[in-house]
Image (cartoon, rainbow, N blue to C red; front, top):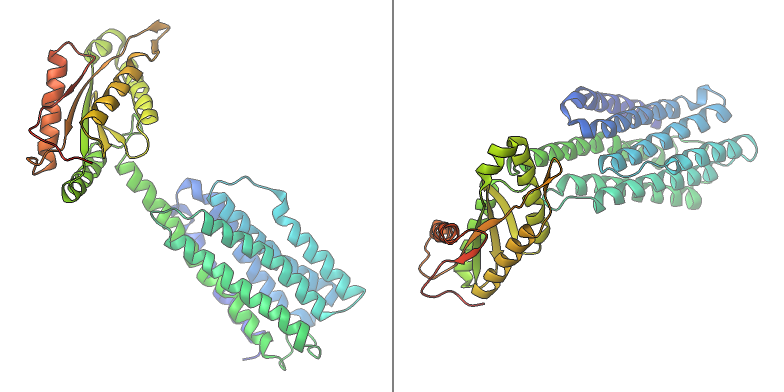
Length: 392
């Protein structure tokens, strides 16, 4: 297969693959669409560059070569901007600096000092900058829970960069007699369109995979998050608590669970309305999220009730943590329409015991302790009594 045929085949495949991304545009989430547009335009520009490579003998070189290679680097620059936009990074005009360097450098080494080697080196360097930056952005920004698509796309960028670098070395060392990129005497000329086509072809598929992972992650977070407070919802916090409970039983380590209820919350709704009640829930949720860090987690059980997971906490640590949370809420400032409103909570805490065979046993004792806290006057912490608890 000669280089011109390879460029034509690559163009058709790029356009076909790019059209798939165009058809999928409306299916991606709105926050990803600007990134998708950049990727699609970048892919189209790579196809245009391939056409110009194939037709370079039909036009003046000082016109077709800077323009074709400029389209190549502009397409790669848009890939770079696409992955930056995907991850919410600040836009910058410096992304397009390699394009300017490529066009000016190519024009100089075509019109004034003709040199194929110099042109290959300039295009290789400028395109590598865009691809290395894109690959590093994808690799560094890979989410821990779903990194596969990011790693795949970053790997594609790096593989193409390695080939581009080897190609530049080849032309510097061995291609002194090669006339242009359509010269059939050099195996590198037909290898170039095949290998460089990996990025717009397989790379676009990897980009769609990354978009799908983002969409899936958004749905999973939405399914596990309480819509009002932003805390983990009952299903999420219970699932996490059950996992921690099983680990604590297996390793015979401490684990405490706190169940918290806002005191006289019905009176807040009745006096100020449900909108003010929602604000009160958000206020307390914000305090709990700020205070429960590290191994401790908090979630909304439902209504005005919250659950606190105190991982690796024994009796004394659990009581201290409960008092700290109660005090933080009691001392906080909350206003409804300029009227200060005192908010307090009652907390029931249970610490894992050898007698607890299921997580529900621990939860039941925490509920009983919460009931005792309310019966005891509210705005207090009660610890359930157990025969013995695991020690750290």
